[in-house]
Image (cartoon, rainbow, N blue to C red; front, top):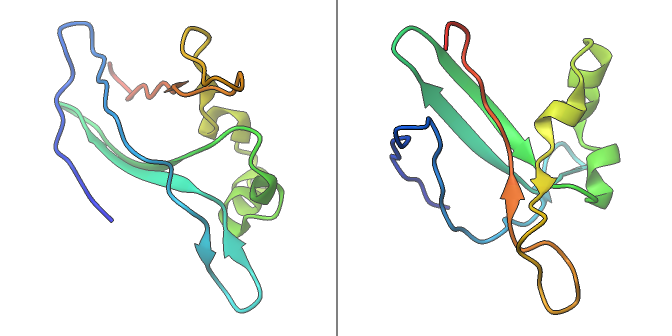
Length: 105
């Protein structure tokens, strides 16, 4: 497990490279789908959230994603999108794009 403190560029964007985390045990008999935790701090707002990976089989059974959907959250906003320009030799995405917008930004 790691962490980093990153600042956005003048366009409000940040880029980083990491490895895809694995799933892990949650409640007995369940597993959390791979995801990355974020804490985003703006001048007037703060957000703690998680980014999920597209086409992940465990997304459909992840407890927190199911709870978010049940409370009315559009979980598509929590799942990153494959970047079109960067592909692995087998055609799979090697880069993802995900947008976070803080209120008042």
